[in-house]
Length: 169
Ligand SMILES: CC(C)(COP(=O)(O)OP(=O)(O)OC[C@H]1O[C@@H](n2cnc3c(N)ncnc32)[C@H](O)[C@@H]1OP(=O)(O)O)[C@@H](O)C(=O)NCCC(=O)NCCS
Image 1: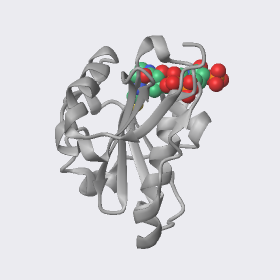
Image 2: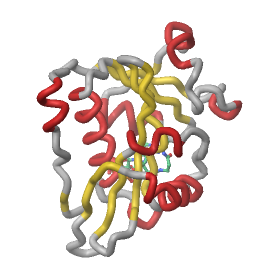
Image 3: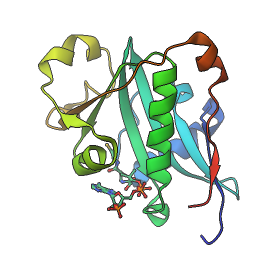
Image 4: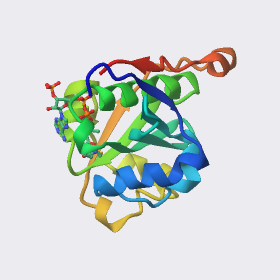
């Protein structure tokens, strides 16, 4: 993948099947992806192929970060980091103050790279009870993590927030 440009952009229904394929390769659930696809970001290489994705379910000011995945052959090239970083910036600009996630595979990744901390589920149960991911049996034993983010909510900024799209992994 020498000198490839990767573009981070908002997902749309048109990219749903490709995003689901990435999630299948990572053995991550499809539940709730279609309903939330417009809150997903995807990474596209310069051949137009989707190589990664990450999503967010909105539950008021709480965001549930989910479906972070990069195709195995593209991992370790900062694509996951860029996707998550851009999603967190976008969430902050849209009024999210806390981001939660559930993980069985990447606790250290989210802790070391982004500062998420393991947290008790109890305080969040009510707000997340409608979440497709939260209600999956396989997520009941997953590590629950929280990141508080600075609220930069400003409707003008939210409208004009542009993804710092392209980079060379
Ligand atoms: C987690 C994932 C999205 C990271 O994407 P990526 O593009 O490979 O990550 P980056 O290139 O930005 O970062 C690589 C760094 O993260 C570390 N890392 C990657 N996956 C990790 C994991 N599961 N646990 C801990 N550290 C991890 C790498 O060791 C590397 O560390 P370094 O910077 O010290 O060398 C990707 O590995 C993936 O798709 N994994 C399978 C699906 C998954 O577990 N998703 C999380 C669901 S909650």
